Image (cartoon, rainbow over all chains, first blue to last red; front, side, top):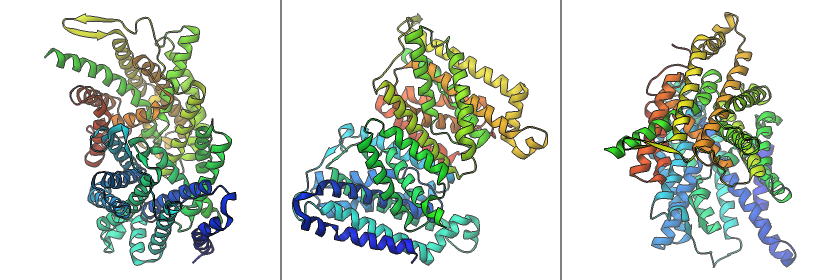
Length: 306
Length: 291
């Protein structure tokens, strides 16, 4: 493992131990606030790491990957609300649902390349949002209210869920980076025709890559839904979230294992500061930051080091 | 029967507006291979400009179109010099993110200045309409229709016959070839970007006349411009007309028969299907170059 990757593993372990520290320190510190920020950062990390499998290793920018965030979120919310499926199970089913949908549409969708693919997935995301807003059983534009979670470790449960998901996504990236499976994906990224001619079943591997991305993104949507306890089409299919995860990915460095994690934490920290310092103009500052990041760090922070 | 005829009229009116609105987007795409996701926000910027000119100086939005187009042209040139020139070397999805960042910046800046209220330009003729047989024809929509067609025609003539227009098409078709015969691509890029943004601003004036607007309308306008550009096939003024009309008919008819709220879903679904099965559009054509 490289230095950055080792540092990331250490960082994740520290995050795992943090609740013990928070318990020991007791009442004096804003526990809820710290956990909330770290949870959002971990969520963004998972989303960026998921996208990294697809964009970083396979070379397909799914600009609308948040579509699967919505699918996962809505699936688990509906299952839990209407059929009283337990939390754990409905979140997992949300992820499964997202990856099944992804696997089914991948062979057709992934005939498109670069910005055609990017826009097609974005259109899919917006279309799903519109559909959900118009349907009866999804709660329409009113959305769905979920009960607040009570029970086992209720303060820390979502923090740990997001942390586990981030660790899992990190592991997946590590695996893809080093395995034969990953070599096949990288071959597709470099030259699809050449990959095909050396015996890589490109359609199948692209579909795998797309489904992995969708699985993690779907799980993320499910956890988010129960964490926030209220979902509606606007928040679950938000294009701003797509952009945020892409910026996190770019800041960190596309196609590296550790990059997306650091990019997400950096971005979340910056937007938290911007949010609290300049409440009025946070959108303006965020837009400006994105423009500057692309112009001056087109290869990401990890890219600068190399 | 009457109702269908009425819907057809509405669809034609809307379609012409969509066609003209999309020309700037597809021109920049065709010439520079850049998808400008901030395009819709420039349209909205044009609407606010028209709003200010009308509310504070009393200039009619249709009369102030040259002013809007001029501002747009300068904005486009400035944009090209500061951002797009640098972005052209980057990977396509980086450009998407860059322009999306610009879009967020513009829409939130507008929101800061004008707040999120819906604004509308209430010209004296806004509510006027007249009857032809059993058809109701709104005066504003008719004026917008005529203006959009007229401006589209001007652009067509410009690209087709003027020296600059032919240089733009030459660069779109083959950058190296155009350089060989003495055309400077970077000045063509400046002009194309200027014209693209000028079209965005002018269609903003029309948009402001057609309906109320908020700072955040830009996103869906961009998606519509994209849809129109690929529907007809990228690269010809005529095919933008075809694409615009298809979108106009789709929106009006789906809106009437299935309900207003399904309009957007229908156009997005169409977008996905076109991308998947006819990515070069219904009319083919290549980047403004072929005649």
